[in-house]
Amino acid sequence: MWLKNFKTAIILKEFTTIDVLIEQMPQMDSLAQMEEAAYLLHHAKELLEAEQIITLHTLQQLKNTLDFLKATENRATPTINIKL
Image (cartoon, rainbow, N blue to C red; front, top):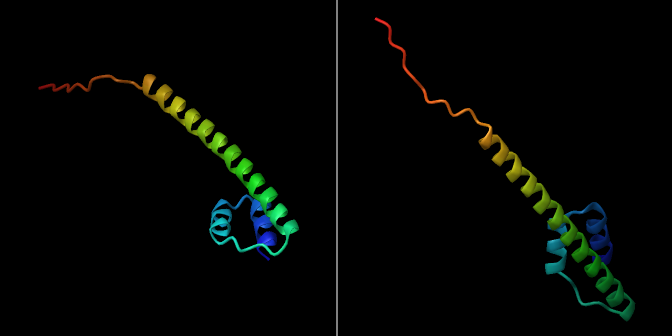
């Protein structure tokens, strides 16, 4: 059951579920299950690393956008015109 849930979490990219399942990883009954679990764990690691790269790229784009907006911001000093 754990293997099926882990596969589903990887396919759906449910990172919180992957984390929970890794924390609750049961003892495997056979060598085949151990090999499958090892393969899935490796795949999950690659998926998380790819997601991390995408997140870092997105954060860099946001930083560049904020820097651009700050650079083009109108910084006119406010003046008060009082006519009597």
